[in-house]
Image (tube, rainbow, N blue to C red; front, top):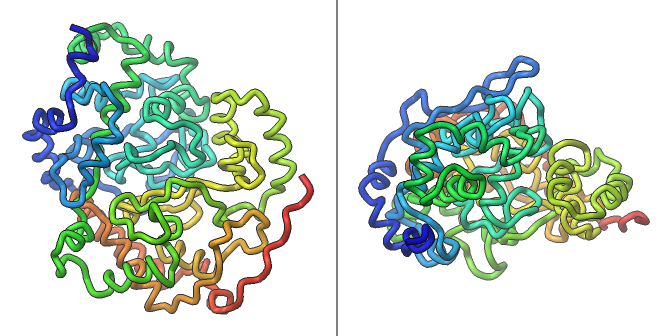
Length: 442
């Protein structure tokens, strides 16, 4: 029997097969040493972050969560996807294995630490040899619902997403996928696991499939907001309820963080689109960078785009690196907002430390001198109490497994907001929207 026929069970079969261990994982509390609040420790020059260890927060999630969209989840699982315990277990092991990197010091989990909601807590990720990239590590929680992967959407599948960091010289630094496979191919345990999972020995295609399959189990719902939507009026505070109304009204968040502008989105909180929100672009000479990128990426090779996104100043061009459309200059993917409280710092460059900073940025309509700014960015005239309500709503999107971390992170951010609000500009927030300049000649 072929591996595909053996493993092509439906989502229902997958749920039943894993129900015992995954339900236990959903309810398992995180130990104090398993969670991280605030910025991680500074690193010595030339050193990669320490390898995270798997623990309760790394385990696949139960499908039995309040708010989990069963129909959507089934629709995004690729046909014939090997969602079986043996493949998932193999993928989890590979996810934490530093041997997939060039020198054994970096794993997928380095940038996507379960203790930090599968982020790394740094403004930009640090890879092999202490090399800093240009992008903030997005969470892998609910990444299966993304229509594209990475901040610029340069690939569509989780298999492609798993492959690129392994060979990026600033991230995991392997010479090739084959090089990574050679590091683990001789280990008897891996040979046994690959044969059990796929019916054949260690190979690159199945390695990426296993990692992607594990990532597809990282569904994260069961937040206070989900219980509120399910009918529990007391699941969230009055402040959070006011924030939810503002999110879909005066604060205009729903224009990007919903599938449509007219219907409230209680599931993925993203339009799966790309927007220029005025972050970072002003400090760069964008037109020469775009012209350079057009020349350097004329062949459209994915490896070249991947390196341009991570290695240098061209990273600021965002989606333009993929499409070469001027309208996409400095546009980045709208992230899912679930667990946003515990995935600081924020935005594609990790430039904002707290949720108050994020809301302040939007409140003043920052980046209005940017000719490619999204047309929906404008001063919002939110009062301080309205800002607090909006932040409170965002905290209600924290899944049950991250409650303890969320409580500590909220306290940290609240304390910081009392003494530091670098993005606050009340006069601009309550002022008129100035005219947007025309793009310069290209």
